[in-house]
Every structure is written in structure tokens, then in C-alpha cells.
Image (cartoon, rainbow, N blue to C red; front, side, top):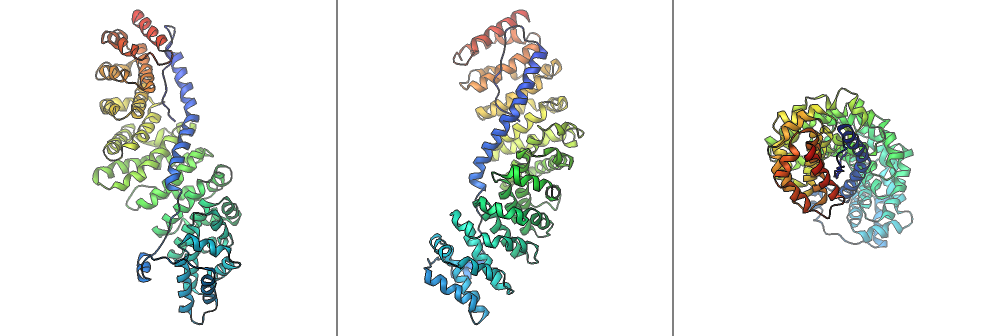
Length: 503
């Protein structure tokens, strides 16, 4: 995994092996920092994705008179529950539950409801009745409660969880979908709910449900599973159970590119896979199950798709796929299964650069994700570095330096990966566009960009005879001296002078 790395240029005694050793140490160190970076990105994403989802039938809402929500008092709630339990006609009982459900859309009614003794017990009784319409409306009432922002409301629904799990093996896809979204909402709200669901068998229930032929069910399942996988206790208590089930194999099947791939379903399960990988519980298992190959093929498919369509939803899938690949490539097992992704290097790089262009024009905030993957591909792979040169991708890479400082650091890190491979690679980098580019980056005020530029220069000076002299002749020394605030910069300048004298 990557981070912005500052070059540690030492006076004249720095040899090739020492430099390689230092870079390996930094690469090893970046795995831990990369996990922290993933955690930070995950935390930011949780503000958007660990949010509850509300499943409502728009046609039904309109038929019932729009979305006007009436706050219900205790007496009204008790009357609706009484009618739902003991009404003479089934239609009367159903209407009572519909009215209750609409009232439960208001937070104040939800609080009143859970305070009433026996209210949840009555609702659970209706959920387990043998009348399908009453079951459905009772489930809808529970779903409204599950959407509450108050954890006390979610915990009040605990008596219903075992039944919701049981109904996942039912025959009605609509009812299963409703149960899954309700469970997903409850999972994200309360650790008490998760503590109860695990021994009740939520993981086996989800593993059985994932074989459903209904896309709406699969999408709802992906949502519920992703909420479960993001729990703070997931790495210790949940993900080992998931990895021990058939869920990972089925997830990978659902991510297989082809005509059956559904964007909504794939997005949900790609994020599920991302959370599993970030836990680092057993990524070697995922690799042996073909995760790298599946994700690599999906990357190629997505690159082809962004060329065919203007669909703005594709980045929702590209982002987790790129993250999954980037993280898996840091695993030792990735090097023991026949090479990254079992794919031709040139195909992978071509696809990645298509996606980088897509990000640049449609979603610039995702550029670092793609460059992070490119860094992990090239860090320990001469063949990927060779493909980067043979496909003439160095120049497009340099054009990204103007996007932002974060992007600049990543681009320079990739170039360091290439230069580190030795003299033959440096010959293709220097001087070309790289010399004026480095002069520009050294003129920036960002210390990380400057530091990474200096590291790249050191590699070039080691491997490319005459590079130091050419650089100094182009006022490179003056560019460095403008950054006196950079720590140990004078040592770097001195080292550059020594390298030029002995070059």
C-alpha cells in the first residue's frame, strides 16, 4: 500500500543496494500506513454508506394519500394494535396496520410506540401470523422502526430478529427483500442487535440467501452483509465466520464480468469484498479462491464499459474494485499464484489508464485510487514497469502532475518504482519530458512533492550517467535551494553536488 514518501538522499556513499534496501523498508512500512489510510477512507465513506435504507412502495404511498405523516398518540397506537389483532375482517386488520405504519414514519410516534408495554410483542405476533397480508404490513412497521436514528428504537426490535432471519428462506422475494433491508438497518444501529444475530445464525442465513435468482434480493443482501462487515467487531467475530462460509465464492461469482453482471448487485458485493480484504483476516484464502483473477477481469470489463457509455454510475463499481486489487497486491500470496491477476501486463495497464482518463474527466477525486493501484502493480514488478514504457504511458502519467499535490506524489512514486528497476529503465525516463517536469515540481511549495521529486532524482543520478550534471546545468540546484524549509534539504543539495562531481 502507498503513502507519500520523502526521499532520504545521503552524501556520496549511497549505493544501489542500500537504496533498494531503504525503498523496500519504506514499502514494508507503507503497508501499515496504507491500512491506516484505508481506515480513514473507510471512515469517510461510512458517513455516506453506513446509513439506513428505507424501502417504500411509491405506488402504495400515493394510493394511501401521499406522504402526509400524522403523529400518533398512545391511545391511537393502542387502538390500531387492537384492531390489527382482533378486527372482525382481515381488511380492517390490514387497514389498522397500514395506519400504524404510516404513523411510525414519524420519530415521535416511534418513541411512543416502544414505550407502550407489549407493543413490540403484539407486532411480532402479527409478523408470525398465518395471514400473508398482515405479515407483510407488520414487517413494514418493523422496517419503519428500523429506520429510526435512535438506537433504543432499533434495540426494541430485538424480539423480531430471529423471525426476520427465518423468513429469509421463504418464497416471496418482496418479503425477503424487506426483511434484509430491515436487518441491515438494525445491524448498523446497535451492537446488541449484532450480538444477538450472530448466534441466531445470520451468516449461514445470508449464505443460503445469496443463491437467490432475484436481483432485488441480492442487492438487499449485499446491503445487509456490508453493514455487518463494517461493524467494529467484524475482524474478530464476523469476518472469520464469513470466510468460513460459502459467501466469498458466491460474491466472486457475482462479480464475474459478462452479460449477467448487474451493476447494483456488483456495487454492493464489491464493497463487501473490500471490507473483508481491509480486515486482513485471511486474504490469502481469497487469492486462492481466484479473487485477483476475477477482479482483474472485471477491471478490463469496466475499462471497456466506460468507453461505450456515459453512465455516471460506473464509478460506484470501479472504486471498490480498484481498492480491492490494490490491497490484495500487497499480500505475499499474490506473488505465489502465478503473478498478479494471471493477466497480461499490457492489458491491465491499458485498462487502468483508460480508467484514469475516465476519473480525470468524470470523477477526479478517484484519481488517487487508480494511481495507488498503479503504484502497487509497479512496486515489485519489472514486467509492469516494462509495459508502462513500451505502451508509451510515461507521458500521459506526467500530464497528471498538474491535477493536485496528492496526485503528484503518487505519480512521482510510480516513476520511482520504474527508475528503481535499473539503468535500462532510467534510459527511457531521462531526460525527455522528465527534466523540465522535475524542475517544475521542485518549484512547488508542497514538501511531499519536493521530497518525492528528490528521491526520483537520486535514482536517476545513480543509474543514468551525466544526469546530475545535466540537471544542475538546467538550474536544478537553484530550484532546490528555494525550499530551505524542507528538513535536511542542505544535506540533499550537498549530496547532489557530490554526485555531480563524481558522476
